[in-house]
Image (cartoon, rainbow, N blue to C red; front, side, top):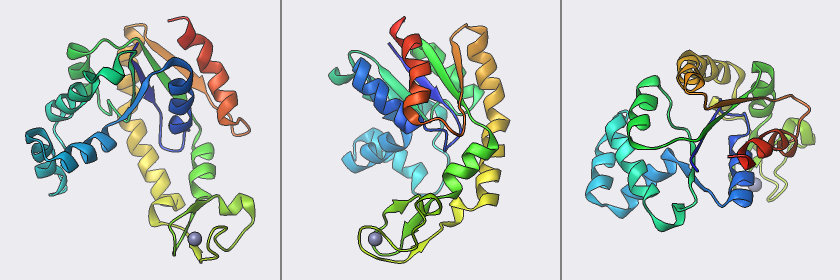
Length: 209
Ligand SMILES: [Zn+2]
């Protein structure tokens, strides 16, 4: 059983993947992590990936798919995988469709307000790097080491909005692609929902596969 998790950053894909891994024995695969692993191993494929990443270039779709398939054929993926962060474009979705059977695409639909609230509330410790939800916890010092907290540039409202607009621009046609194949399940998240609430909407659908 292979599942794609789709949603803007801040939509809670990480938590969702954690629950699915626990309940269904699927392996959570993020292409960013795979790139780092391949580069660290310095395999021929890893070196190929490195040649793009180290020069700040976009890794081409066919290379990304090669990396994915290499991971998916490992024995721990026998029950299936959860793809996170891929496909990001329609072309990637089309290319993936030729080499891997996808059973379900779970799209977590979040409003701009949710993303802004979740990501915009993040503050990082200058000393130890721990991320805190400072705005909600009402703290101004790191809970671990007492260090000063600051907001990273990419957690500031205008960056979050820009990233979100970018995401939406590509995502509509990806969702259409899977909708036509009758594989799309959209979860509408609410600001007051916990990750467990959102997962409750997904679990039944996956269990029926
Ligand atoms: Zn700290």
